[in-house]
Length: 271
Image 1 (cartoon, one colour):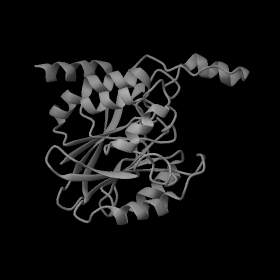
Image 2 (spheres, rainbow, N blue to C red; image 1 turned 45 degrees about the vertical axis):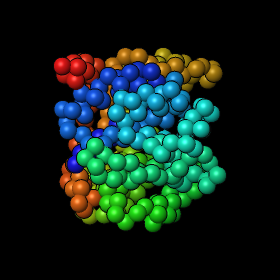
Image 3 (cartoon, rainbow, N blue to C red; image 1 turned 90 degrees about the vertical axis):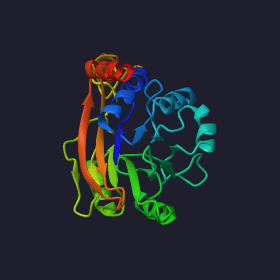
């Protein structure tokens, strides 16, 4: 089976190219399950209920989130009611949302999805390693395909989590830094790993924000709003081939979809 995971969706440009591309990409690549990190999808910070619904309608099977999860309070009822959107599992127990979930892929396979947030250069949260142990103990034994979105800043932190979960999850894929890394591999015990899958949004930018705004704030210390950029919109992500019987990863491949390719995927689906 094949899992598509796309990285941090940034603002309206990131949402629009996702909606445009996913149906055709799913068909062409024979994707069984789509997971997307949506924590920056509303104006670059947070997610609204309307965006969540658009992503689900476009074919996203599960939405993961990170440190901007509660920037838009209207998402809280969705987090409490829906079983295909999750909070980082190492957030406090009383924080709205579920730390892990099980969703069914198009081929009928059950897939457990959970998210963790790193602690290096990040806001204080509970230990992600202890949270991972707790989640793995709670997931039913018959659910052998298990996906982890590790939302963290430091590549060393992400690599360590990959090794910690090697052989116990199907994949550990990093998000948060918005810059794709070239270290994708299947680890020795069968876990697909990449430090960061990159950003889905405007790449003519500083991590999705207008270059001139970030420069002005950096050079003058003025309180300048970091508006979402609009140019060179791309999808960044990975496709993971999985042995559905063992839950082990067979391969992991980086993908990028630019605006020209997005239109081609849209046209191929409409035909």
